[in-house]
Image (cartoon, rainbow, N blue to C red; front, top):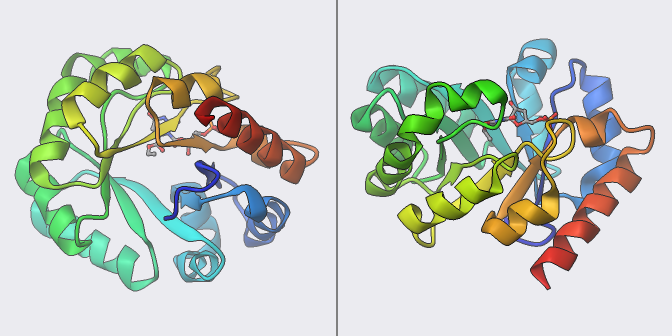
Length: 214
Ligand code: O7E
């Protein structure tokens, strides 16, 4: 995943045709495509291979199981072409390390989640989850664009590891605020795939990010 536009599309649509339409319109402005259960269940796991021929694919199954099951899920994702996976840290260090080993380090660990409920259980342990991501050898963490101040706090814990940040647009966060707070990439779903012009919306976000970086 090359850091160019710093924009990751969250492709939470439920048909292969719709996925291709959105990707074709916005791909010039994307560094990666994140896919989650809605698309994988609707289009089948081969969608990972198909999209990975166009852009880096981050498989967001929010893996959260015992080490052996985590390893099996990661192997299935990477063998289909996923460049990285997303896992939960609350299942413990051994489970996160199983993902790290199976993907050669291409793992992002969820910390404080971006939605209001993220404050309930994930926020109080987010610092520990970030520290766990670091000690486990993960590539980075997921941190909320809805609370940019938390991106800055978590950055202090992880050093130079990467931060990918969802919550821009439909959840109320702003791309430039997240980038200025220390996010390496923003993750955007509905503001692109529900737009009447997904290409123009992706371009506008990429432009906003560039302004924040300059
Ligand atoms: O709100 P949207 O439509 O821009 O979509 C946001 C995407 O980011 C969606 O796929 C959701 O599953 C994901 N996400 C969050 O919204 N909040 C989080 O805290 C974590 C994630 C996530 O993807 O974690 C892995 C990156």
